[in-house]
Image (cartoon, rainbow, N blue to C red):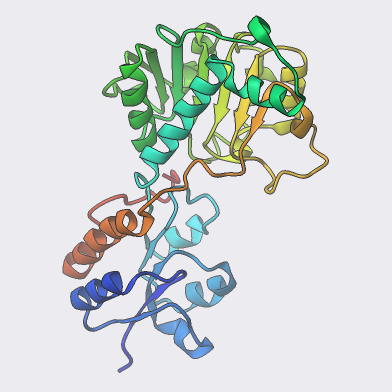
Length: 315
């Protein structure tokens, strides 16, 4: 009988491969597959869409460990039909994204983003530069998972007033008050800084649209490090032009790379970063901490110890 395969869509250091082989001596670990080997894959570390049809047709695939936190691009319905377990990389990028967000908040509040653009134009802004204190500013974190909690912890140190939005309004450490997603429109008008960290689901796809932007404070800073399709790009551009909010910092977009024809590139009240908020030092170590815990529990009793995704909800 052929050995089942743990297939990885990316290479890992030898030290981690050795730990996988020690935990799972009856499996083969592979980063490349022949067509004949596709039917032997039981565990997929990452997801290769090129092999999607064959992997799903084999009926031998039992568990997919997503490398990213977002899983909206995976065939969740098919996984559900075939009882394929799914876990994600949630938590790996928390510190990096929290630091990215705090950098934007400081850069905007101290006029650094404005000054950088003025430097390119050799323009001395003097006291005309935008500045504000962040202490006591109202920060709304939309999506209070691993990343949201880390952002709240960081922001609390600087005396910000922190509020949160999650599915049910459940309380979260370091957050003064949380609200259910259904109350977002009621909460938005009083918020100075609004951060979207939501996963992409049917409920959040296109959530930030023309109607929702009318509830923003005209002085608000909006930051999106969640998923690009959560924001209707053209409607955000209109909202910025109409001064329904003051500034947008965007790391993710409906279409990536952002097309050169997009008006966002030339807008003074926009910061564009190329989907880099989650770039994380020591990624392999942090990721393997999740995968190896799950591998051990999977081999023991076919369960996942951490970060199991509920397939029907998408997170």
